[in-house]
Image (tube, rainbow, N blue to C red; front, side, top):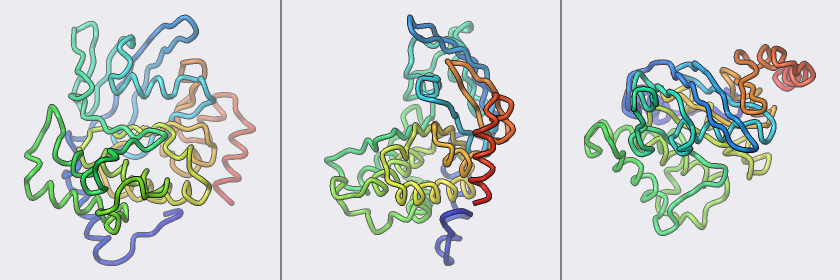
Length: 275
């Protein structure tokens, strides 16, 4: 695993706990997306079928529609029409009159700037996600939920931060707490919108290591937005290349870049992976 290893029996036990369906709201199934939206200066027209595990990366230049697509999947773009099916559950099917509100979609969302509750400490922020999954599933007080909560804290290495005020945290610490809070709600899908963009190189490398650990030890699929070739090279199990609101290629990162006519970027990606 690049950038991080999990050491000791406690971390291995945490990994095992996270491999159980403790943090998963639904059984695994492919993510199906068919969404369109027209604005005066932008049109989104996307059809995708993504795997139910690992990290799928939406890659493209600024303005290509990556964040808009992420927001539409989450239900944050009311103008977006079409169909979204996650883990076998229909979140949106406009022809059939189905449109779950955001709070019923079982989605975790991590923004570019960690949006934490300033009046709560780190524990309070994470427990907020753990206790309240609206539209919900299991009893948040169940023993299985507690084990999952503790495992999540262990995997992300934030046990020592639990009593800290969030305004005392570094940028990297804030993002780890934001990821933990999102996962504590046991989402069927975790959406990450350029979560490393505001961090320096060392913190980006650190967070990528934690994301790799989560990918390897949880069953929660992630859809990750970036325009960073480094992040694509390191994190992507599947690449989705976007341009002008459309998907131009999907597949293994190098192959997708070449299929999208981005041979120079594909060559750079190969060099990054062998550096």
